[in-house]
Amino acid sequence: RAGGHDDAVHRGKMSARPTPGPITFAAMSETTAAPLPPGIEQVLRRFRAMGREEKMGALVSYAKRLEPLPERLASLDRAAFTVPECQTRVDLFPEVSDGRLHFWADVNVRQSPTIAAVLAILFSAVNDQPPATTLALPDDIVRQLMTDIGLAGREVGLNAMVQRLKRHARQAADVQPA
Image (tube, rainbow, N blue to C red):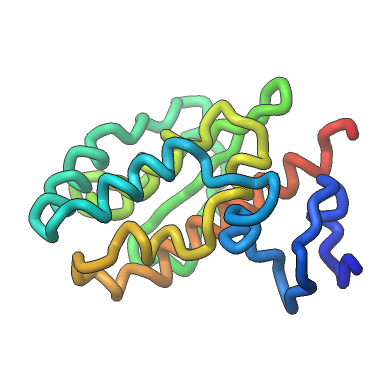
């Protein structure tokens, strides 16, 4: 039973049990053909082994790795790319080429290093990969990364960014030839 999950049917993947609402890829990643993206699995493993101060240092390091927004995207109307749930202005730009996604973000890294770090971590795993890689991100990736850091107030906006990435991935997957 698809139960309104056209995006899952489109890719030929079905959850073992029907779930209300959107497909939960975190649960699927443990039992089906949608494993965690290797880059995310590695980062989560590292973060689980770190203490709070080490995690904070790692986040600062990741924030510095966020690619700058290309000039060709800077001039676009931002309305379709802004993540309104974020306290900080964040614009996420997807590009599709040869069936692979590349995401860009416009965020002030100095003012919002946590946001930049999470995006850099996510982008390192999903950029230049097929949409299925982005869709395989666990829904609780932010909670997993932020455990013991004390930044729970940022989770709503960070989760909204993950959902926005997945929305762009679903749209890209829908336009790919079967």
